[in-house]
Image (cartoon, rainbow over all chains, first blue to last red):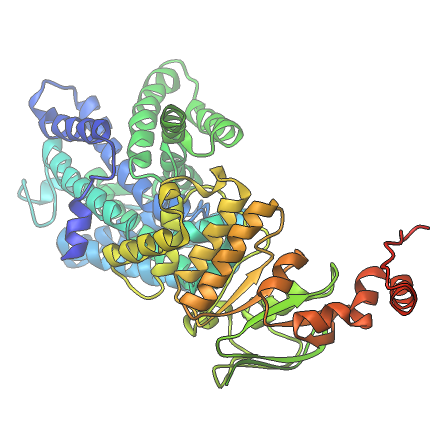
Length: 335
Length: 260
C-alpha cells in the first residue's frame, strides 16, 4: 500500500516541476491527434523507448554510480526472445515479453556476480566485453538466424493484433509504449525513495560507509543491475514487434549500449527526470542528424561523433548532466 | 559483562604489523578511549573490529558470539556502528537522507525510516540542517552527521574515530556533550579514538594506549597520563627523564623543546 502511495507521490518536487511534467504527459497523450508526419511519429516512439532504456540504466548507472556500457545485450535477449517465440511457437507478446525479461534477469545474475567484483573503469570495460561476446554468439547461432537475423512478416497476421502486438498503424505502438513509459516512470518514482534506492545512493557516495551501515554492497548492486536489465529487456521485446526485423548489429552493438547510457548521463544521472530530458534532446537530434546530414549530405557516422563529444563535455563540465545544471541554479537561488 | 572481547589480535599488511597481539575487553555501558601516536594502529584496530577487513590472527567476540570472520554489514546488523575519520560525502545525499540510510537497516518502510531519522536529527541538534547537502556543511556539523548516521542503525557499541579532529574549542565542547549524551542518556557503549587529549581524558572511564601496534598501557585516564611508558611513546625518552628530575627536585614542570 505504501509502495503505491509512494509511486504516485511527486510532492517532494517543486510545483513548477510537477506542472511541467503534467504538461509533457498531456502533450504525449494528445500528440497523435495533431497532424504529424510518419517520421515525427517514429521519432516520438523512439523517444519513449529510449526514455525507458534510460530509466533502466539510471537505476544502476545513475543512482548506483556504476557506469554500465553493456545494456545492449539485454535489448538483444528481449528482442530475440519475443521474435523467436512468435515465429516458432506463435507465443503472443504479453507472454514472451515477461519470459524475455526473466531470461535477461537470469543472465544478468550470472554475469553480474563476477562483474561487480570490479569497480570504476574496469567495470565499464567488462560490461562492454560481455555485451560484445553475446552479440558474437548470436551472429553465428543458426537457430536465431545468425548474422542476418529474423524478420516478422506483418501480412501473416490479422491486424490490429493486440495479443501479438502486430499493427499496421504506428499509433497503436505509440500508445503501447506510452503506457509502458508511464508504468516505468511510476516505478522509478517509487524506486528512488525505496530502501534499495537509498542504499544505492549511499554506495555511490562511499562504499566503506555503506558497508558499515549494514548494506551488502555486492548484492545491492546485483539486484539493481537486474532491475535495470528488466527495463531494457521489456523495451527490447517491444522493439522486436515494432521494427519487425532484428539482427545482432542493430540490437546488441556498442552504439546502442552507449546511447542507452547517454540518455541518463546527458539528462542527469541519478535524477527522476534525467533520462526523459536526455532522450528528449538526443533522440530528435539523432533522427534529424541522420536524416539530413547522414543520408542527404553523406556524412555517415556524424551521430557517433556527436555522442563522443557529448560524453566529453558532460564529464568535463557537469557530471550530473542537464538536470544537474538546473539543480545548481536552484540551490544558488535558495542560499 | 564484556560486550566486546579482543583476543591476541594481529593485523599485518605485508611485513608491517599494524596491530600486534592486542587484547582487551569493553564492558557493557563503558566509555573507553583509545589513544596512541600517529600510525599506532588505532584505526586499523577499529577496522578489524568493525569487519572492514579480517584480522591476520586473533579472535573477536561481540556479545558472546565469535565474530572474527564476519564482514562489516553483518557486524552492523549485530549492533556495531562506527564513524569514519575522513568522511567523503560526494554530495548526492542531504543530511536527512544520509541518516535515513542508517534507519533503513531495520525497516523497509520509507515513512518509518524518515520518522526515525527525524527523531535522531532532533536529538543530535541537526534539525535545521536536515535539507542541506553534507558536503556543504562545516566540519563540525559533518562530524555530527556521521555520528547521527551511525546512531541510526541503533547500535549497542559505537566506535567513534576522531570525531573532534579539526574542531575549535567550543565545537569540541559540543561534541563532548554529544558523546556524553549518547553514552549516558541513550545507554550506548562507546569506544573512541581521539587525539584531542582534553576530550579523551575528560569523557573516558578507561583508556587504552597503542604504540607501534602494541598495547602499551591501560587504565583510568589519570594513571595513563602519568605512565612513563605512555609519555615516552608520545614525546620521546627525554621527556620522561625531565619529568622525573622536575618532580624529584623543585616540583616545577619543564616544558623542554625536542630539538634543544
